[in-house]
Image (cartoon, rainbow, N blue to C red):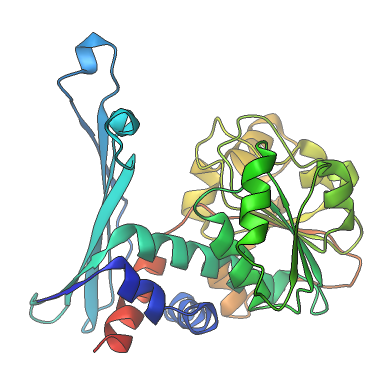
Length: 316
């Protein structure tokens, strides 16, 4: 069994190729059991610390491969100078069960998450989208910027974060890119300028206001992964045609869809399509240049499986 580290994953998974692979996997489909969620008690828990979480996300295609991503979330790790989120991905032969590779989990996750947004953008953003806004400057932000730039002719990437220093640092990291990267001071004006608005935050209150969106904008919501979190307001939902990565996940987990469904701002039939339906041409994506589209992503084990397969192929 091979061991594949983070550096190898990042070198293997360029965004265009991974986006193509995700598109193929959504078209083909795979078996997707419900993810397993377990609480891991910690010694410090009774003394005011936080317990850990174990997530197990399996997926397989009959006669091909199966994989399981194991993710651990231990919020108190910051006190020990350790990442709060860690994980591994096991890829195996679905005919024999023989393990093929053990792969770094966080690198698989950020690459496939960004590429899923790029895949949605193929169907939902304008072909001539030139200005993108990145809301948030965390670990996922540089991957989202690069993935969108690999999909559309981005000439300017605006970056806004609550900590302006982080936004400046992220912009500086793209000094050699083919596009201009600029830290934005005012969120409202940055949203109004952007053809693509991508968000990756842990916000519990809406950041992007629908009133700010210009005609033809595409909104890509990747953070706010629990029902209590939210990155966009009700007006964003009202003005947009709404799409999701998977109905089974986004309609239960992502606050940007869950909360409007609960309040009645969004009806279930108002969710136009998921990535299965878009890639199979069962539903239409963007239908006009002035239409506003909104995509909510919460992730799926299908994306991890596709990314793991491509990683193994390209590191052979």
